[in-house]
Image (cartoon, rainbow, N blue to C red; front, side):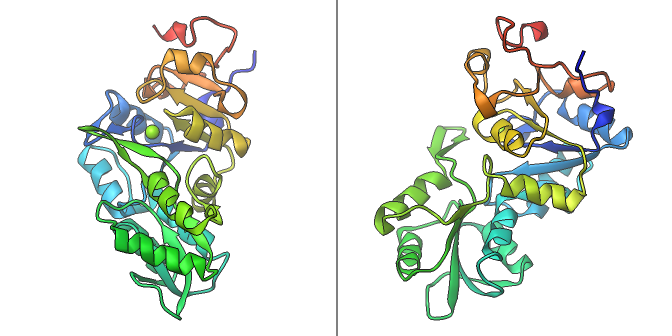
Amino acid sequence: MTTTAIPDHDVLLFDLDGVVYVGPRAVDGAVEAIAAALARGLRCCFVTNNASRTPHEVAGHLRSLGIAADDDDVVTSSQAGASLVAEYAQGGAVLAVGGRGVSAALAERGFEPTSTFDARTVAVMQGYGPDVAWSDLAEATFAIRSGLPWIATNLDLTFPTPRGLAPGNGALVGAVAAAVGRRPDAVAGKPEPALLLEAVRRTNALRPLMIGDRLDTDIAAGSRLGMPTLLVMTGVCDAEGLSIAIGEEVPTYVAADLSCLLDGRPLPRFDPSASPAGSEER
Ligand SMILES: [Mg+2]
């Protein structure tokens, strides 16, 4: 029997949308499950590909739902992106394409976020922002074509809104890529490892568990780093999607929702041969 009880982990890394909340509202049972994990001494860290909001804004959202989260418990793809920029340049002006979260993360790392490309610019960081305009993409294009490094916070092509799927940062990165004839030099968000590595560094996690609702981002990111992963069925993945998962997208554990964290019992291990997938939860 190869089950691992939650007490065998020291840090839980939670994806947010579809796991902890959907839009402004908490997922049923998530608040109680996180409170129970914290009460048992587990550190909870929230990792999001969404680059537009600052950790303070995200943590405020979590606190408004009744979750005890400090700003430091939130790691955004903008923060991981700024760490990647630091591998290319030690300080200086960075062209910041995106929302407040992008500029704030660069400033936090000692860079000067700017909105125009000039002789002082050392790199480009591109993340989602609702007010990103053609002129911003043009500045990025000029800077990248001049030979500067280009870091993307994430490559999600779409994200959900109340009116349906809207273009995500990956779609806007694609527009710049078409103009410059190449892809970004580095990407921070899941499934790339930078975001989870940032969370592990910050929490000194030794035995982290990655919890998410998407196979191709959350589960793949955990798998690439050798972390056990827990898929919850409260977001985008359904039983059919899970049944065709292969390789790094196969989760270690699967549960209907976060209530599997409530009592500290062993997590339900995913058995790819069982059919239909996750049927023990139904
Ligand atoms: Mg999600």
